Image 1 (cartoon, rainbow, N blue to C red):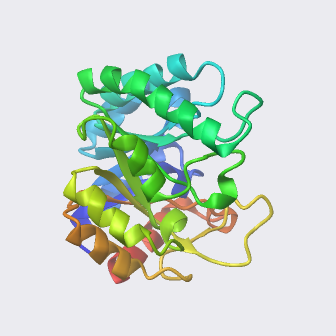
Image 2 (tube, helix red, strand yellow; image 1 turned 45 degrees about the horizontal axis):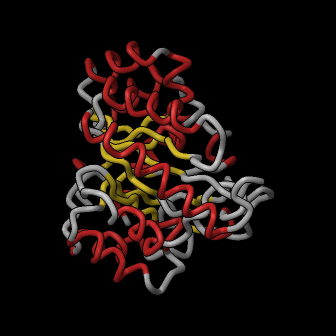
Image 3 (tube, rainbow, N blue to C red; image 1 turned 180 degrees about the vertical axis):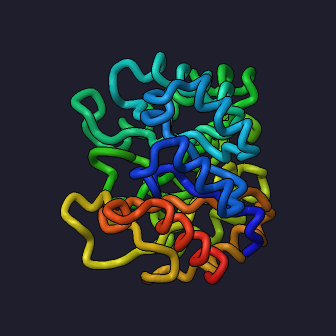
Length: 267
């Protein structure tokens, strides 16, 4: 894989403060970062934008918008879009939200998600920000994301212009689905792959299942085949490594970043 396409998602090395992350990226020649709203807000959005810009780094995505089934979603997502503009990224990744008392089943939750994205898409489009619906593995359907497959994400995205709404292809969430390759081709043909994220699947999963994303090349996913699939679909953008892993977070962040770059180039 071309190192010029490598991007490190901030969550992979969340133990690094933003200035430390930026400095490590510069030292290692990492060209891109995917940022998260919470640490960026803590540092200051304007200050973070200046720090990353002055270092010559590209902000490949901002994570995350969404949670459309909860109260206050519209104000929060408009703020996320504005933050994306300030940070200089054109892609806001959406984790859409799970079941709530108002949306107690999957059909009602997905209907609410589609309605919310319809209300938000013009605002994003006017500001040059693409909304990237990320389907999450079905184990998260109840509490985090009622959109579990790429087909479900595309069914929503295709109601809107491709320049406004597309999808995130994340190997960790999609590798199990036999229908995903066809959906990747469908998304690519329509110009709707707005983000490509990679992580490996290792077992046993940890308690809570949130921090089970394995380092590249250590698990069950054929990452080379997935990257070939996404490239064949026409995607030539950044490849963002997003790992949630307690063992990695307990280690020296710069070493983890260097290890992740090495793994990326190998697999």
